[in-house]
Image 1 (tube, helix red, strand yellow):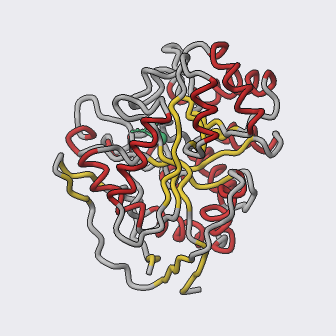
Image 2: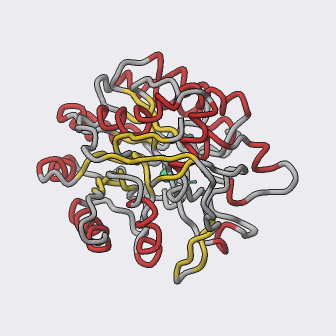
Amino acid sequence: MTKLVIKKPDDWHLHLRDGELLKAVLPESERHFNRALVMPNLVPPITTVAQAIKYKDQILNLLPKGSDFKPLMTLYLTEDTSISEIKLGVETGVITAIKLYPAGATTNSSSGVNNFEKIKPVLEYMTNVGLPLCIHGEVTDSNVDIFDREAVFIEKILMPLRNDIPGLKTVIEHITTKTAVDYVRSENSDLAATITTHHLVINRNDILVGGIKPHYYCLPIAKREHHRLALLEAATSGETSFFLGTDSAPHVNTAKESACGCAGCFTATNSIPILAHIFEEQAALNKLEAFISINGATFYNLEPNKSFLTLSKGTPPISPNTISTIEGDITIFDPGYELNWQVL
Ligand code: NCD
Ligand code: ZN
């Protein structure tokens, strides 16, 4: 196969940042995606509907004329988030999902949740109105090894939470383990998982062997190879509970290449060509559309996009390694091989 026409993809987990970074990274997503679920971990975090409206307007104002890219907004859940704020988000149609960060789990998550009891009334309300909860699924206990934090979160937090609040539409985001794949498969259709591009490409050796690779460091951190293979199998299975959320998370190089580097891989630019490459290698190109364009929309009760994206295979175009911003360069994720699929 040398040409592939699929419905335009959606990105169900994206960091667009704000200010100069937003200006620089937005075109990279707009080029290939029709919709994106925009993460609220700005400084300060997007905790109110008014902030979400303002942020959405900022994004819309930067889109080129005629663009049909739609930012879908999220609210950052804190222990103080009120039901009335969520209700406002639902009734105005501004909010597509609520984002739960365990406090301290990742970049700009310090306002997140410590005490899960406190958010239960809000989660019950969300269940009643069918508003999805997107979860960064890692515990933050200092005595839990970083490579175990997702599995421990599923067992200690997510399973009890889902038992207490049955029917809550939940996305366990950017899964990195076979544990998560198996758990999602064992549950009903209220639970889904996003999988990133980079977690389909790298394992923990890629980060650490032969020298530390700061541009492969993200959270949740990439795990052992058998976990990557489980993610690959899930993503290419076509099963409706797995869909793309790139978690494209730009940081300027000086913040990544540092004695204490930030977590995040910037994959907005080349996610689609990388995924076409991977799916072809797995003899699963016929499942690519389900993973990037259909399953997520279905979970969110939205129609798949009406427009199409054409991919073609051939001599790879010369592609830049970085994008530049006024704040500094951002390194584009390097899959470690030449890409021969391109978006026309
Ligand atoms: C994200 C970021 O930089 O905002 N970083 C990351 O490693 N994925 C936050 C997140 O989604 O964890
Ligand atoms: Zn993220």
